[in-house]
Length: 123
Length: 190
Image 1 (spheres, rainbow over the protein chains, first blue to last red):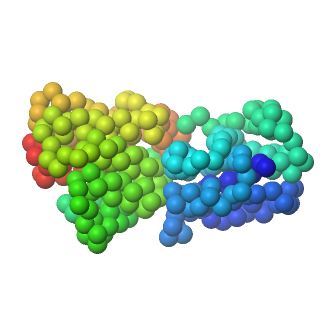
Image 2 (image 1 turned 45 degrees about the vertical axis):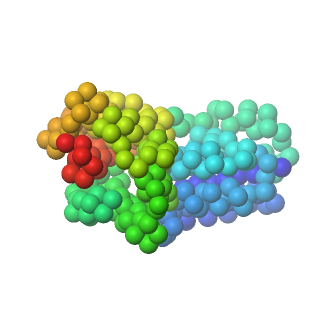
Image 3 (image 1 turned 120 degrees about the vertical axis):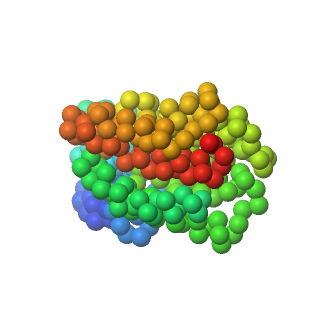
């Protein structure tokens, strides 16, 4: 099974994006980590770890917004046994494309082909 | 660590102010949250070994800072903790190697190098100076911090500003400068 993790600096952003993704793919595993532990703007390593642990998928596509989201994702992935790909795709468009494809039962090659043109993050 | 927490507290507003024009204006408050959590963790259950002290600080910074500084400083302290191992006291040479391990952690985590207007522009010259001379002092640290001012950022949030990042001192280099100054005062780097 394929799944999705969304990581952003605010809870509202990932909750909103998840709601959008569930419109196109209602029954795929999507877990989220938004904001710091105190609910402030920022990212939380522990929330990301929980989002990884709670996601039942074998292959997880990770989407993040900015800076520390990526660094914390990197650390959490290093400490996890699961297969997780940081897609570096456009946050909304990337997650939407992948959610649609997972929902439609697409294989990982097809997902990769559709993701490649919208990988925009290189820092 | 208490000394570093105090100096971060004293400079919290200054750090966030530096972060305002070229970042998101929260570096001081993020660092303050992290170092306070680290001090609390150290005081509530005092670690038995030096290595554990560094590990406790690392985990507190990783889980509490909330900005990119968390995983960067966290990885540095984790690497230093690994280097310390079973040692309870370190020679100057060992301190230099320990700091170098910390620096390598930041470089790997941030996929960054010198000249990109980041904390590495403080860590690398400071570590090299200490390695070569066996001493460091506050004025040298201030000098390295100031050298980030005319740099153009190519890494981190400030990189989005391109040319407009020139003329601002890097907040990460500044907070790292405070860490090194604390080490000069407390860990015999002078």
